[in-house]
Image 1 (cartoon, protein in one colour):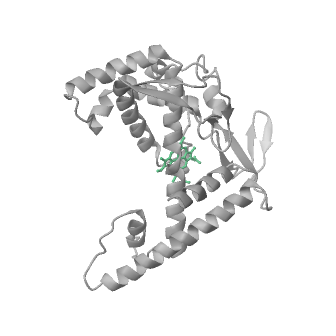
Image 2: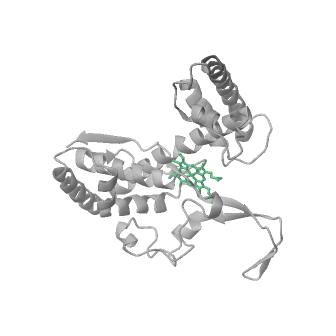
Image 3: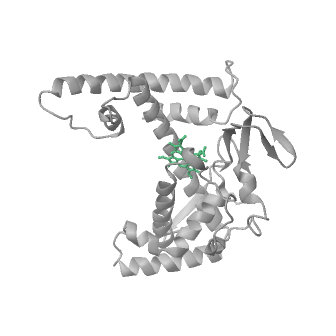
Length: 282
Ligand code: HEM
């Protein structure tokens, strides 16, 4: 697991690096990590395929994880994924799910530590819910009742700007503010700028969950991208954050060790100290 963790970390660093495939660059290292991880997963895939062959007389294989799901998947015409497609899907799913939610959670800890009045309201709402549930676990339905908690989660997603930009290609000549973007050009959509622009979000740099009482203007909020390639993990991110905020606010107090720590923006924004913190159980 440690080796796999290291390899994924290498790929994540190469995510937003300049694509210079020269020894010594972050991008080159990421490609090497990608190759190694694919080799490791290929061995596992071969084992699974062999196992499936051996067991075909007895029926289905017993494991039921992502790789098995991809191996079994068939389209309408009964076509299955090639080895390369299975491996690409395993790598990209782990990659996008690997650090993203952890980073969002990290930012929620930081924003809340710096906004005690928000934390107070969050704690109030979640203590009330916990009492209602007799200290039991919350369910998916309960999460939608945690109105303030959901607003804190959304404001965290806005302020954290974990995906600062997405790439697109102009499929036609486009005129924008007097400039022509020729067909075929690559375009960066700078999401962070949209979310930090005070004309889109009043007092945009302050952590204010109540701003979510009204919906943002169309097109001004795209933390998960847009269109057919938008993030399929967005609901999972929101639910995970809400569950985390519930348990955190009712169970713990915490203090930042370096409240003024600078932020490292690549490959994803994160305080330079990794957010060193002390926790106390309430
Ligand atoms: C806070 C966490 C996350 C943020 C901010 C985020 C943001 C994004 C953005 C901006 C894109 C590009 C969308 C576009 O080009 O329009 C994307 C793509 C994607 N995300 Fe996420 N994401 C997060 C978490 C996750 C998680 C947890 C998963 C899955 C477990 C996931 C799966 C994916 C996949 C598979 C794509 C590629 C979609 C495609 O190209 O069709 N993401 N994400």
